[in-house]
Length: 427
Ligand code: F3S
Image (cartoon, rainbow, N blue to C red; front, side):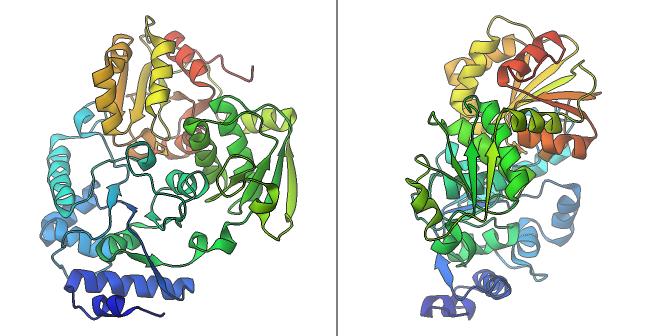
């Protein structure tokens, strides 16, 4: 791999042992990927937390968070002192919300450790945004900017909607990226890998956020990790619709980049989306396909008595919370059901300021931050049946927690929360 003089100096240890180990890791990683060089990045989304019992024990036995970072972010058995980061970095979601630990079944000792870990993290200069939607809370790279992001739903949004460039990185590569400001130059950093491969012709109206989630889920299933190009969309989707679309396409498949002709920045025309290529396959999404994919998504849903309604996967935006307040104000969550909504912590602060928290709590719902049920494996006690407006969470939760799951619109979910019954379906 070719290194610049500055990279070579980091590799040789001129900036200390942590940076040396980071550069060594990037070189090994880049070689394995076939990358010829590194690229500069000043935008990282990372996880450096230690929220599992195993990691907490590891920290205790080996000298704290420097040891955790050395081992799990730099692949180093030797504990090195971690310096301040070089690249702007925001933290991805975590294992629980420290403000709602009791509700999530997390003990005090874990919260205490969390706070120590967060002091270490912010001390390095990492922003404690703690969300899978960094682009909703201030981390918004520009078109063409090279990034190093974790979290599949964030990665697909970064590439497709923002036109910035990232692969789906892991804890180690982002750890090394934040200390060096470098990441291997391969995959979606390169123009040719960003071109479309499959054409998707949409032949049924796609309007609600749930429609976008279903379309994404169907497309991911069809194209797997390839780059779909979508045509036939009439109405320009908002942030929440594109967020749900990408999150579901990266769940049923491994989509990291998509184009919507006339809407996303690298697909103003069909020709631009495909470059000189022809689509390898063409798929058509119509009303029958839409019903079919809904049935597939709801295949675990048997009982209509709903114990838990989970909203906020990916983390809810301010607009979605505003919509929710309109649906729920003056209503009451059923005594046999719980409603939890997940959002970034800074959005939760805005909810507090704007009276949204008061409206939602008056109805019996709870706003949580930093995590989600899939990440935390936390649900209200005794939950058997969950209703959600996220195709991604509906895909994962039955497998992770063994529950039945229903997918529908946000309005369907609010209805389920207030009646304790699932009555959703395509309208
Ligand atoms: Fe975010 Fe959890 Fe969904 S981390 S994308 S809310 S599975």
